Image (cartoon, rainbow, N blue to C red):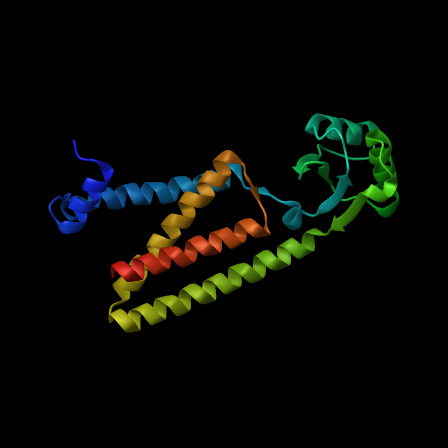
Length: 216
């Protein structure tokens, strides 16, 4: 039984090959199924968007001895001032971040004092901020517009360079396939989608196009 390295060398040298092209209909069908499943998962389960996209209030408590999520959630719930469940994240080795629905300035001050009292820290150790949903909506809209323009320009360039519009369509379909796989995984695992995650999506987009052009 050949090792992984030997198998790779055999593929590279042409000593070993697999009938991919004769079975292209099967592979294209599987890829189409992945596309449908990926976007269906997003439509059904949705994405776990971060506070930057949904809006809300955020509290960062520093120098705490208990970073348990249950303690922070219970503290916020006991105030009776916050609707719905709060999202708690550990930050570093001695800090906790609590995200809630949007609160007015008076309620924010009360929740901040309650957190400081519960954790036994000075109120100055609790930093609060508020993010409006309009920011995330604006960024999402501009990102979508930029993506459409970018893909149109890439399709035009590839059509001219390879002298075939089919090459451009193939590259864009491969790109959509890779994005569908990624967002499908995010929908299943409900991993938080933040601006940093969007940067990761753009990185995948770039590598997908790069690899396709190299193959062509």
